[in-house]
Image (cartoon, rainbow over all chains, first blue to last red; front, side, top):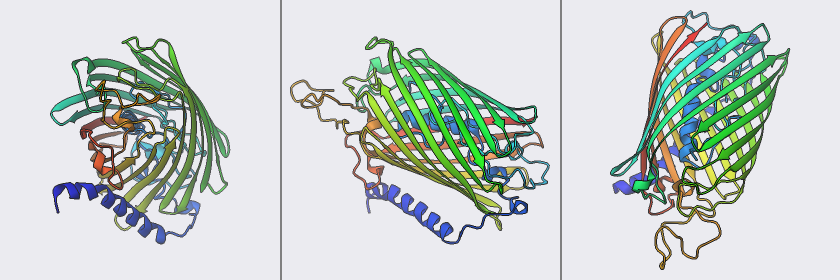
Length: 83
Length: 390
């Protein structure tokens, strides 16, 4: 297989990998909302959605300036002339 | 968007080295002057500790044989609890930008070279009630040729068991555009945003979130520095975002993943998937490798690098009413691979370093049929930061 064909297939393989990963975890996760005393793991910093605002902002700025799609995580961030 | 799960009524770790965000609790952190960055957070208690963070960030991209854009960005973030039911947040970033952007497709000319500065900031105040929090925010961004002002308001409501939080947010953005080449003067862009979301503590180890956003914008969308760029004066965007954090108890590893669907009235459809794993290395370090895949279709009015046979570059055949050679509106895929190392220095201080490699290629579009004739783009993204609780 040529290197160009490998590159062609790279995103498809990544997409399939992510899909398989998600399917595997979801299949074992029926909804069982935790009691208050069971939330120790949920309280960990790494479980936070958006735990590093400066990092998130910079990455979103980069992607906003290089790709057509944006948003999805909140409202009111304002615009810039980079796109 | 930042969401802390409803953990206010829970036991935090007893670890004295707990990093800042753990004790930040359920507050909105992400209020930064970028599109879609004011976050959806949780509605339970106000923060009891403040956080101050600084970072130095850089972005450096290139296409084959040519260095393009370089950005150096120092940034600052502060969160401060006020009284017992209020929180104030503010951020400030300055960008030094230099390099060159294509004037059409992948073409770089001498006239493309530029340098610019951008200063942007946000401020946000949140009032916490029993099960509801209400936030108001403002943002600005100043460049030599572009000024943006934004305002937002949001409400969050948590169920009595703190396992579910609903979110409703709205925002307004007003941009003024005065390009230095004088192609247009005093142009404007107006955006109205709406978003609804829900966050659910799915199990003791799973946190999921789903948001739907809608943006209606009108005004000047052309790139004034590109030759032959005529875009519609209205743009409607819709996003659907799902995020899922899963903690693996046996390994102590946390896997964070997300998927976003995007569509707009330009005819673009895009998919974004991310996954990263937070691996503890002893008591003080964590290593977080990450992978992101992005794919988009082209805008209806994007034209491939096939030019009018009589006039030549950069004009498209037939001189259509709407047209753009902006490669960001073409069909392509992109992959980001990176890793972040965090060091919890003590109970107050932490430091982090992150490197990412970003690359765009036409044939990385999902399915492979990307836009032809475009040079690939590579970028290095570096971030180093320090944070302190107070």
